[in-house]
Length: 276
Image: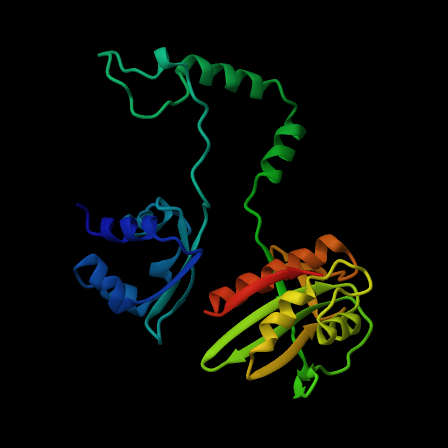
């Protein structure tokens, strides 16, 4: 096994989109020390060229170096490929070797590959370019700036929740019970109507909110805190560029809500997404 193959195998086996490792950790994976140039010069970690053996370790595994910090002795890798290419299944007769043994995976036969290449060749150059552009990896993300609406207050009739604006929003109910912390994410067209409906434990005026689930979770809680993202506090980004999310639009509101739910789970919280 070549010196940097263990790093290649490690990267190929990761499930993460990004991976940050200290130089010491990489040396443990390699089973040997990094060269002095790797710990002294950022250029050793360059992706350009891709001809050096250590570069090939991460590039062929489908990763690239996104950032390296020599002073802190760590490097961040980022995926360049998400999943394997889809292979067209060839007829069974074409999926066997000349000796008659099955190849193990049905790959495109040479004749079919040639036929596909011929079909691609007849496409005008502008069409081929448009196809290549549309198939580039897409980095889609959401940014959410939460504002605290306030804590709930328990009285004899149940929980009283703070007042809020009558605006579309992404709302989070933080439910604290003992050492437990649950987060219920609710998307709503009217934030204040949602909070009033939760207080009453009934469906809101639109008849679409599953607020009884929130009220049931609050029933045995020790503390309840509400925060929300209202118009202007959420963005949808594509490849780092984007726009403020339109929380009045069902699709964009749902997209931001799913991002919030995933973020809660990655933070180790018990998260539930509820449509309102």
